[in-house]
Image (cartoon, rainbow, N blue to C red; front, side, top):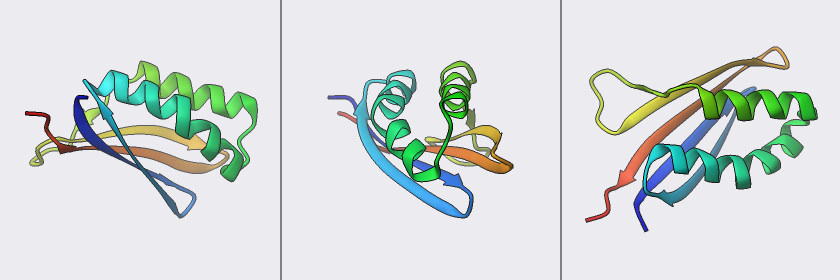
Length: 96
């Protein structure tokens, strides 16, 4: 089953939150792209080009551990449609 992770997306004044079980962050990001990016793209009205950019940046860029915090990472995607897109990943529950 893996660890439970919470993903918080901050975009255009909205907060989009989801949770998934995954063995590691790379697999977690794959799940998020597969299930959540499609839904968020519809809500935020991203073009197919913008959706591809978000997918590429989430896949290619390494998330950064937030200083002073345990099991919390940030993956800043940058500006999409003139609004900042940020992904926070929190390891919510560790599989024993």
